[in-house]
Length: 144
Image (cartoon, rainbow, N blue to C red; front, side, top):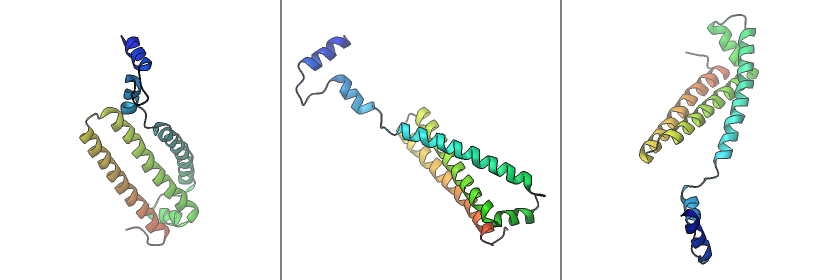
């Protein structure tokens, strides 16, 4: 049956007509964003491995974990900048991972839109608070 439909569509199709397979491809086909998203996830994963190794090594090299030591450590740009990168990359990676889960498993368009908007808002809020805290310490404001 499918062969007959395709043969009929291709045999008598005029330039303005489309075959059933082309019509399906146009409505449900790839948006061509999957590969880019996949690469972003992989690159952010790699960056997180490097940044978390830096973080663990940095923590192990500290003499103690008192408030004063942590403030002194984060006041140094060689600690504050990688920490800011770690925070930004972590939240970006969380956002991308949750987005993939929602896109794969939430099928209702309204629920999907609401959930993605909520994820974006909460990730941005969490990242903003974390970045603010590090910047406050790094720029001499100390911690409350």
